[in-house]
Amino acid sequence: MAVKKDGFIFAVIFVVLVVLGWYWYVKMYPKQNKVSPETAETIITPTVTVEGEILIRQNTFIPDMMTVKTGETVTWVNQESYLHDVVSDDGTFVSPRLATGQKYSFTFTKEGTYTYICGIHPFMRATIVVTK
Image 1 (tube, one colour):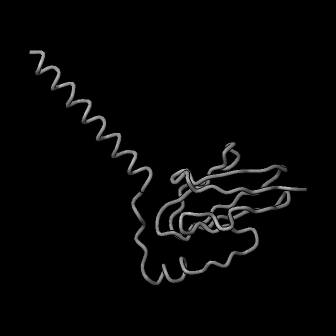
Image 2 (cartoon, one colour):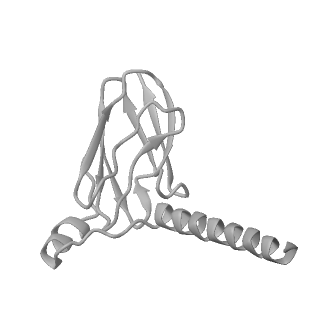
Image 3 (tube, one colour):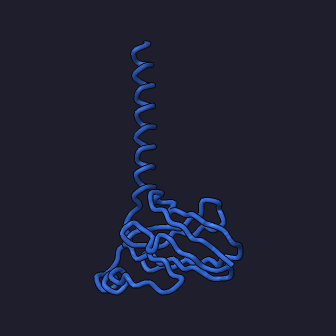
């Protein structure tokens, strides 16, 4: 009977590990949005930024360092074909998940240095410095 019990425990542990691995994979690599070729051409191609705008493109924030004054608004624009978000390290701002072409804006009211990541892809990092 000990062999059956050990086999059952092994099977349960194996299933739990598979489920956890699947969850991690889905969280790190979410399903891509369906984008028509016309939308991709108009949304994904431009790399020119507008003042106060940060592009999310090629798994990076462009620019990855920005300086603004208190009271100014920064807008992030997702130009990728999959989801991203914007999460400050200190919790000051947290965007919803952004699909292709969606934007998130935040107005900075306090001086300081704000580092942030994409919560879905934490290797994506950038900084905003807010001055008087």
